[in-house]
Image (cartoon, rainbow, N blue to C red; front, top):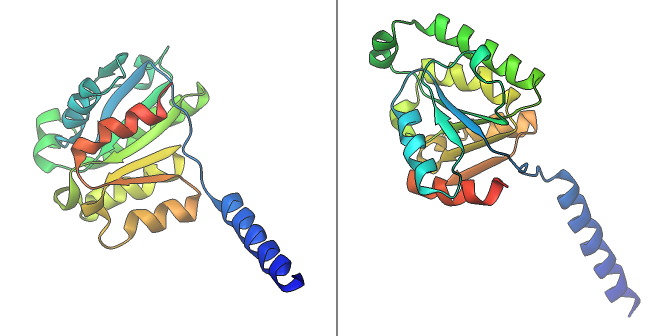
Length: 184
């Protein structure tokens, strides 16, 4: 009997310890500003995923500035560097990093939640994209990615190191259901 109680106590303690270390996905609020970091097509894909979700108060703006986020409660940044997209937007990677850094700083000052997403898989992994993620994930409140983007554990490690909740979906279409779970 004592042995059984002892084992039960250990199981309870381990469960509490595991729960205490769990990083909880925050509840997010509308309205939402969706933008890109790197000018890839992922942000336009995210707009479609929001359209398919139950979240109705959102705006998509590729080159949103810190002055344009007044009144929004959540900033969703879909990151992934595209040289073609950057060129079409008339901005280089350094300029994009400056724009998004200023945007995140302003969002945090306004009390907004920041979400970083990678929904394009391996197509948007590489030195430039990983630089964006390394810079912006530490300032996010939640990260959502497709599994294919994390085959090397990059996002898992980055989020664990920074205490950021990470949600991994198999396919980008599954993002809509996850959005419904975290938005009020």
